[in-house]
Length: 478
Image 1 (spheres, helix red, strand yellow):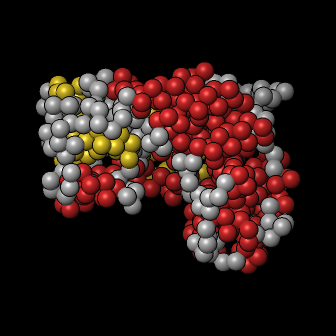
Image 2 (cartoon, rainbow, N blue to C red):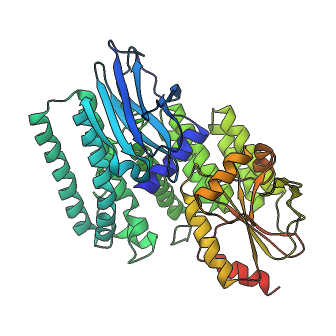
Image 3 (spheres, one colour):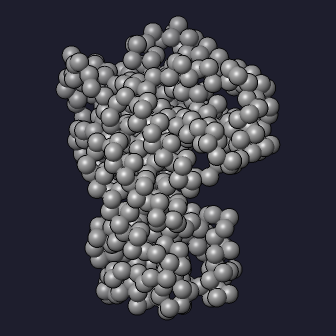
C-alpha cells in the first residue's frame, strides 16, 4: 500500500495535479487544521487542495501549528512534511466547522498519526482503513494464488466486513455524505483493484491462461465504474485502481491481436492500445492527462528500442492536453535518443564532498554504475543498501551515487551524514535541472552502466532487476 501511495504521489504531485470542475467552489464556514510534529526534520508543513497549495505553515518553538481555512471546500486535503525517510504526505478530510488537530512522529509517520478535535473520528477512521489495508494487501496476495471462484468468495467477505464496519461506525457517529462516499469509494475501488490485478499476480499460469480461466461474470462490476468520480479524484486508491484497470483492459485487447501469452510492459502494441483506452474512457482531463503521461513515460523508460519512442510520442501527443507534460515527454525522448549504447555521456558537471567541480565523464575510469537518488523519495535507502551489496560482489566495478535534486551543498552534506552515506563516492549536480534533462533521469531511481572507456552500456536500467547482475557480468567479460 505504501509503495502504491508513493507511486501515485510521485505521478500526481510531480507531473500533474488532479482536479474536478464543481458547481460551487466553496462551502459556507471555516475549518481549523493544526497539529504537533514530533522529531521534525524541517520547520514547516505544506497544506494543499487538489492543484492549489494553500499555504506553507511554519511550526512554532514547540513544533506546533494552527491554520484557518476560510470558506472551506469540503473534501480531501493533502499535508506534506519532511520525515525520517524523505518528504511524506497524507490525506485529511476537512468539512465546514471542523477543528482538527493531529500528532505524529516523523520516525513512524502513518503509524503514529492520531487526530483529536471536531472531525477527528472520521479522519482516524480513514487512517485505520489505510493501515488495515497494508496488512490486507499481503493477505489478498495469498488469496490471489487460489482459483478465481475461491479468490472472489474470500474477497467478497473482506468487502462485506468493511461495509458492515462502516455501518456500525455510522450508527454511533452519524457522518456526512462526503465521508460516507469517500469510505465506500475506497472500499469498492480497493475491491475492484484486487480483481483487476488478479491475472497479473496469480502465479499458476501465464497471464493469457489466467484471463481464459476467469468466470464470465468476474468483471461485471465494470459497469459501475465511474471514470469521473469527483470525490475520489485526489484519493490515491482511486488512481491506483485506474492505473491497473487500464493495464488489464489493454492486455486483454493486446492478446486478441497477438500470439503473446505473457505480460510485456515493453510491447509497443500493448502501450498504444492502453493510450487509446485511456483517451476513450476517461472523462476528467486532469486525471486522463496523468494516466497518459504515466503510460508514455513507463514505456519510454523501459524500452531500449528508440525507434518506437516516436510512435508512442505521436499517439500520446494526439491525446494529451497538458502542455507541461508534453514538453516533459518530448524532452525525455530527445534525451534518451542521445544516450544510446556506445556513446559517451553528455558533458555534466558534478560537485564532490570537498566542493570541487568535476566532469562526470572524467571521474569514470573503470566499469561504473551510476545511480541517482533524492531525500524526497524513501527508495534512496534501498538503492544505497543494494549498491553496498553489489560493491562487495563486484569489486572491479565503481558505484557512483548522485543526488539528483540537491541544490544546496550544505543541506546535501547534512543528508549524507544523516543517512551515513560515504563521502567518497557521493556527488551532486552543479546544475540539477539541466543535468536531469540531459540524462533523462526519470524515474529518480534509474541506473546507468558505463564501461571502462566511458561509453554507455545501458542508460536506463534498474539495480533491483533480476537481470542487472547479468548485465554487470557481461560488462566485466567484454
